[in-house]
Amino acid sequence: MLAVLVVVALLGLTGSALVALWMRSVLLAQRHADEVAALYAAEAGIAEGAKQLAAGDGQPFSGYRGVVGSPPWTASFTVSAGPDGQGGFLLTSQGEKGSAVRTVRVRLATPFLFPFYAGRTLNLSAESWIGRGTVYFDAVPAYGTAPGAGYNIRGNFFMAGTSQPVRPVQVSMALPAVPFSAFASLAGSPPPAPAPLSPVKGAPWTLAAGWYQAPEECDGADLVVPDGATVGILGSLSCDRAQLQVGKDATLVVTGDLVLTRTKPTSTSLLLENGGRIVVGGNVSVASVQALSVSPLATGGGGLLVAGGAVDIQNISLANVSTGTSTLAILALDRRGCSARACGPDSSNDITIDSASLVSASRGATLDLVAYSAPLPGASNPPKVELALNSFVSVGTTQMTAAVVSAGDVRFSVGSLIDLSTMEISPNPRGLMTFSSLAPGAGLWTQLSWDEGGS
Image 1 (tube, rainbow, N blue to C red):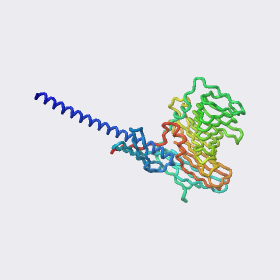
Image 2: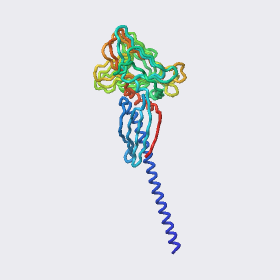
Image 3: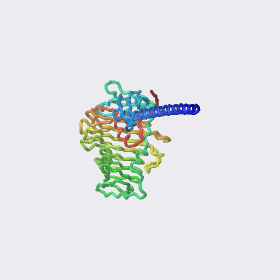
Image 4: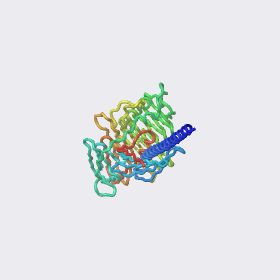
């Protein structure tokens, strides 16, 4: 009997110890799970914070709350963003799950917070024969620290609210990596035998969704990509006296070059409506581009032009009849190192716009131009962006929101025979949302530091 009692007592003590250890392990596992969930929530807050920065004109904010996960496994975050030097922000996100609290602090920077950013030399020029116009910057432009970097100013360029000429700031900043592959794959993979494309001269041809083989001849023929359609053209598209129209939220991918020329000065070669987008694997040479919002109820006009080579545009016209944003985003990206049919060798990411005009039919409309000439490692000359605003007579006030960024030089010139005008230039990061939401992984920000903390 004594032996039995001893054995029972030992078994009871052992069982109690095992139960205590089990309960402790459960509590530790629960606490660890809460800490992991809190950390993931904090990281989700960082991603949401970057999105809010881009959508909110790069303005600081605090106390933005959100919830991730599904009940009963939800966790919450609170994120704030404050300025951290020129073009930079410090995002602080606190994730909570149960009693666990984790904090993530991330320093981010982007050149798109500047109206102009040149990795090397920034050239600003305003000239006229009669009169003397004035250009005001609401935010100072910037240039990088690469060899040969600097700035040159000719003409009346002023910081808004001051009487002194603008002195661009020097900021060392890594340019964001925007992957060309994300855009090149928007139309999927072409079939072994795409449908033949045989446009009729003098008559518009509406393209159904799918892939086509580029035509040998398309002079005088108009091509239309209807609203919401996704169309691919295998090869190069080269047309004279023709108009290419990309409708609302439509996508056109051309794996080769795009060449659209004109013989009539009033003809429009490329028309992008209400968020239409075109992706070209090679070079783009277009006589005229018009990006507009054609509906008074539209909230996002303009369009997106992505090229895997150089972009040469004779004239750009941004027109808006709505109170929304009419954004034209032009991206010249490195197309090497991806597997889509539009990918391949790349020798130039230059962007040249010989003339641009900004027209609004509504006082509340916002016009925005985004241009990005991405780094091209191994190229003999760094990429550059050249933008000219030329007119015969310039009077009144012109407002422009811009994010013009180049890994190399940026050259911005304003020229008129008679110039009695005032131009106001402001940055507008919201224009970047035109393309950032389309391509997963198209990072607008460069991460400078990452710090994690706990409770």
